[in-house]
Image: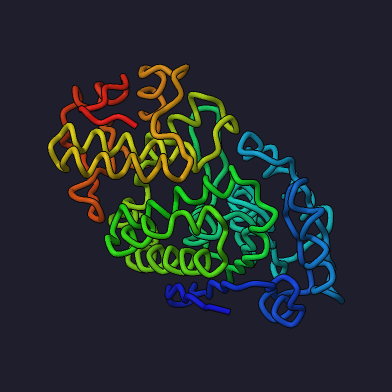
Length: 363
């Protein structure tokens, strides 16, 4: 088992990465505190992995809330279901919520933990690659609103993250590739050596080689942990983790939540960020082509769907947490492996990218 520590003073916690962790009763019993445990999961994950928690957490007041699967269910309605279950069970402040699932489950369950009686303990057990490398780490919790993605939420750190590589064995290929988008993001935004490694090992990652996956998960978590430790509440450096996300969230919103996976939208968004950076002469055509080639090699989209208009994307981008004084702020490239938050770009260049102009580089 590999341990990555997120050092945040009293809110510090470990990320535990390994194979067979869910079958380790002693580990589960020691990491998950409290007599009252509410497991939040979804209808796909529950039949596969909830039994391990039930077996490993004996002598607990143990309850399960099973949500529908999909981004379209990351709503206040699902949040209310969890809150109602906690209240009906008369759970106290010493209770623990365990998120067993992907990013949607983790985000909703975390927001519920942050809100119930002004905060109870929270454990993340991510079962998708995207959640293991990204959404389970850092304490961002939220639900979506019809007018904007992740606009209702809180920063709330878990007590621990348990990333069992075995859960990836049942992950559909599409979900695995969506998770690779976030792995690629870490190389692109600030770790050129990791970017080179991803390019060299991408085929092994797609083939689910366990040694390669464990390294990718560990390295991604270390990159994210370092950024979170430096800027827990996203007042500066942490905004770089949103590379591709302003475009990606706009795609998800305009297309309808759940049509594209989050990682697919982020992949297209990173290519759009590269094209805008190229158009602004921040990076070369060769660098832009390298981003697009890596994304397409991973089996991910490099542009938004044709049925989504530039106007719809722009309208959605106007509702983004990074915006300031009405200005859409974007994470763009200064070089591959080096990114920065920009608000002084030419709007004509943004419009050109939204309208699909390629700046001489195609997928």
